[in-house]
Length: 399
Picture 1 (spheres, rainbow, N blue to C red):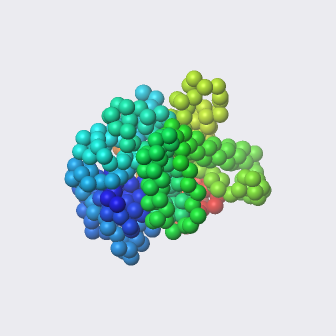
Picture 2 (picture 1 turned 180 degrees about the vertical axis):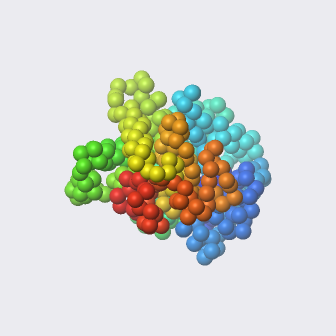
Picture 3 (picture 1 turned 90 degrees about the horizontal axis):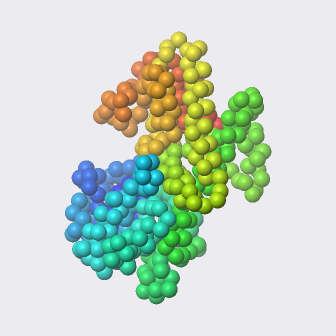
């Protein structure tokens, strides 16, 4: 099978690697440096399993910037380009996805297009009519940054949205699900073939639920800190209930990353004409949490000799190099508005001295010496020696 994957972020590259074990895969990206790295079997993102597969597996994978050539012989084209939320339009910016759809429809109208980018509910049906292309399906992705290939190798479920009354498109959906299963390590993977719009809704509702869970444990942590209680003991007692479990229970500066913030905001827009209050409460809870964390940092800074706040890592999680919408950036924005000087320690930005107007230090000792308070959304043992300077709500120090 000839497969083209557009976009080589976490979703795109992990799918390209997974599928290239048994298929001919071409990965398309607009950044030449990323293309060169992939062709040299060097991963442009932090992902242990991708590194391992690049070094140990035989993969039929080629990267290119020439989209037209990549589309010409493709049986399936997977779109995994970014769709950031536009707060003014109250809608995902789907321009990159639509650009690829238009190009594929022109170059190879027989190819099946699989949209894996997160899109608004109803998007796929709309673009099928807009671009006069019936071969557009939707398959939601459920990946963790830093563990994207692992999650594709061990998926909890595979969902493909199609037109179930159309036998040709139904078979195309089943075939695509089969390709994902073929590349996976896990066996007996649940497969769900749904209608297009229901598949889109699954992704947004699933991520909104995860955001709700993060917000719940963050509010628990706020309560514990205000009442001088041990949040860890409370969380352990709650999570021993098998109905609740231990996932997504580690307090943080708020939910963030490349999915939850934009997906919850899109869900809030979708609910404008629907009765309900929970989604709005989730979004507002995240803002309240960031306001609260900011106030605690201010309080700690008042007793510090040096009036500089240091940000230990911009990334959302350990073992990640993705800064997009990381929760600590919301804290930085609030502190900056209060006139507080902020500096950053971020070793993945080796060749930069400034990020969004903030000074970057790659020397850890220089960084720690100049700061009165160091904030860490996720703690690391290298902070142990200056623990008295650190403000974090990371209880488990695992993710």
